[in-house]
Length: 143
Image (cartoon, rainbow, N blue to C red):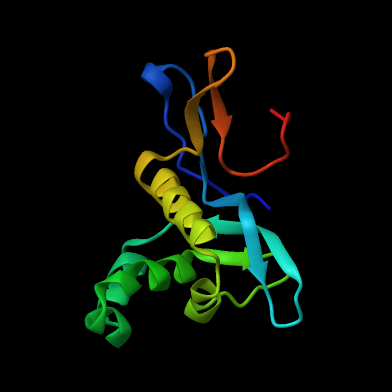
């Protein structure tokens, strides 16, 4: 489920031609998962990179004007394109997430939009060894 866009060719250091790709969609796995009306738990999903419009449009939303804390709900709903089998992600879906899942998505949003990557440095609590993990999902033990 990875979408990439090719950028115009440009020579690296003036030598030859090279194509860069821009990854615009990132898979994730919610810590707890969205529970729909039938009781089904949806954990895997996809978030796309935000546009300037994604960050501006929620500011005109009456719910955000009444309660600024609602901004993150509207913003996350705009950029999450799927949670499990749910393709119509809207603020009502995000409102029904567990608080830990919303916090996860807020951090995930910040990582892919501000920092441009989904890797985080962590330290093993047992051996104190430092290593990087990919927060974009995947199963434990996979690299």
